[in-house]
Length: 243
Image (tube, rainbow, N blue to C red; front, side, top):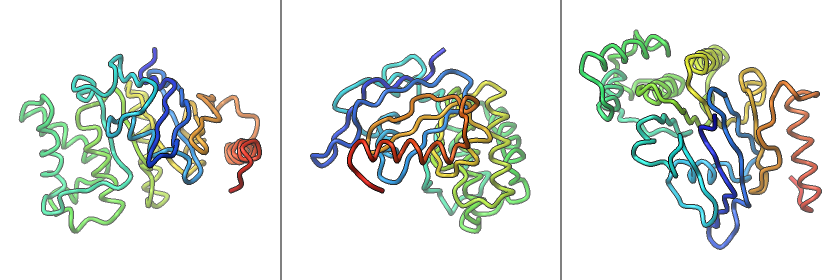
């Protein structure tokens, strides 16, 4: 069952074509990696999916809805790469603030927050102000807020950026457990080893064009890093560009 469909999306910014006829499908229950070299169009793709900008051509279906409608938003979680957090709130207060956007009773929200703090290993810091949190702690509380509504579809932009090996393992284990519980996960990252470890499928975008679409990780005959470089270099040669 398709949970996200991006169909023939084209986007111009400042008179330049940033996305060129991008199409891919994410199936329910997958961890889907979206990979790119710098300047390839990843951020623009994500902004189109999240409804922050409108493509000139194409369609984006989210959870069966045309675009990220209000109904779809109730079933979606999102953590941007650079998350602005209210640093005068504690970690617990921040999660309470975000949880109130969803249809949860006070008792349900309290129980959910306690569970999330445990899952992201922030129980001992829950009542400290966010301004005292380190980068990896802010990353974890940002991840917690993205799943506070138990989303069917979770978008993560560089979820393991800045984390040490222990933090990265915690996030990877959490994503796998969320998938096993029924959450579909779409995430961007430069850390190809993490993608290789946990993703079911990948797509690669380069110079605004999708050059690999929904390729199952298990079907790769060479390491992902080698595959990625090979495909990008082939496309650059075809386009007459260099990186």
